[in-house]
Length: 90
Image (cartoon, rainbow, N blue to C red; front, top):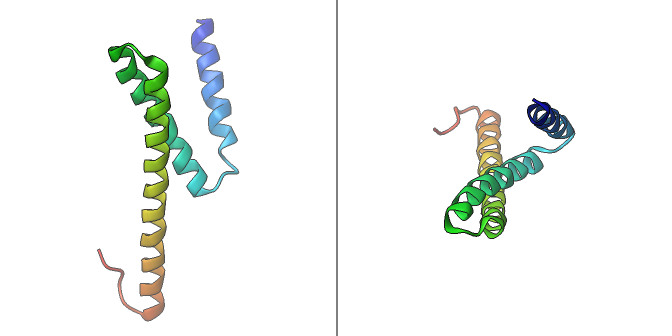
């Protein structure tokens, strides 16, 4: 029960700390977290938990950053379309 309470508290503090972050920072950090978790699982299956988490975090952070850049490009294209009076491309 104490472990569950500590985990819930840790997650709450982590999510609360993200409120002042930019979209780029949030997406990059989310990608790193998801990548680290996935890498840790794969690493534990191959016998090297730490390296798997480290590599997964790096790949996830890069993926999160690239996703953010894509979303920013989409938003810029939408805004250009609004300014030109045409609907945005889909």
